[in-house]
Image 1 (cartoon, one colour):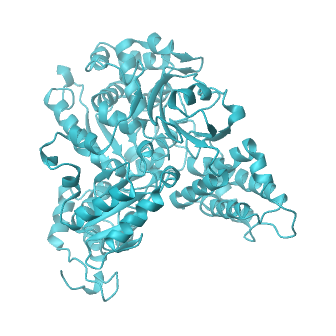
Image 2: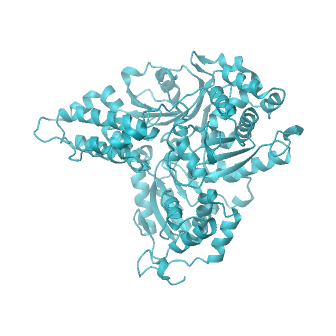
Image 3: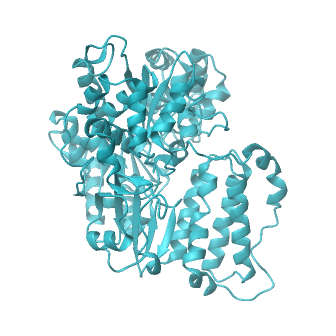
Length: 625
């Protein structure tokens, strides 16, 4: 191991760090054409190869891409999977979602700590292992879960954790622990060897039988306007949560006169409790690419990007194999299916551990090689998105639906579901139920009906739409899963009467605090105040007036935040105040001292009010949850 150089002494004089040859960094940059817009790819490659991004590396990358050192550092410091201090040769990231906690995460973490001889947040002295927590990995149906480098381990117990640690210490790679024949397996077999699909109910649209490229072949006989008319007539709405009409979004982008148009897939489903797109990426990757290709024909795009969340890196080889196969069969690239002028191709953009990149503006920033910060609106992405060009951003489920609509027709899709909520919906069900997994049903199902099918009849609370959605009590289980009643991007989390509602709320607020991009004061500061306030409620230190404080501060954050994260982050508090009022009232007592912060947030956010301009997020896929 090399001795520290002056610009690489990041971990103290007693710890040696790997030297990083300049020529190798230059080679990595050249792989991406020294393109600053590929900054995240460059830094991910550096991280994967050398386990950290040193100051010297940032200087070299800046020189190669024509940026300043501070611009490179801004990207390196934004994403949690990138590190400016050396990580172990094996990094174990334990999923710290509330579902994992309830499933026994603490005992699993303790087993890893004891076996590896390090605590959470530490790297072993010999630099073999790093152990840390990470937010929801999209494995809520098989918690507790962990990432071991790029390999996923699910359904962990303390005994399994010890076995993993012992095998790693014995020199086995994470891949070898999954299978002795890992490298010989197909990418699909590798994926399913790590993660169960858990398809519990296959509906008529996405999870049942799907013919190969029938929708794309139909699209070849239609004009772009006819394609978009069909999508609009089907009633398809964005499946990420916001529910904007997909056909209209495509038409807005197509109407923009520009040299280029782009189609981006939001496969960054970071909302805790959501894993539907994970299953589609595993079982329907061809359908996804087919849907994106149809969208490209409709809006006139020649290039597209699949933005794959960092936690789904185990699916990258599968998706790359699908893209290569489709290019070889004339389904991607130039003159698709022999049609001159119909050119479209895709690349995969890996994320690096940032929930905010599920917001389409932040996702576009990330694809441009920037920190994943939301963009000010207007203009909207359909007007000026990726690299300033008109851009369609939809999530995996939406594109898959679009391909099926072109195959079977608009009326077929429209006739399923209910008025205003047409077609089928994928529900990611997890928590306190007998049969967690993925379910496909037409819109209109009641919570009671769903609970009966998943074995969750004893539920006391259900979180619909993940933390940014709504938590409801038993007296609301008659409500329906539709855009006009209980809207959800897919997450359904079941909680039994044994769970502490305020513990769940406090966890969700800590999640939003951690995942805020930090751009605007209401989200950056206000959510911290809310988290601390809930902590005091849990300790019985709040008084009755503090309930009004929670409501007032929540309203302010919603009103003045720049993007969808801040506009929805107070929902765990607001929905539980409404639906579980006795939980709060039981924890308050009259006192002179409340929990109000001395910091004047109202003055601090005057600038944020001006920036936000209260523009509607009508085009937002809402974090692709």
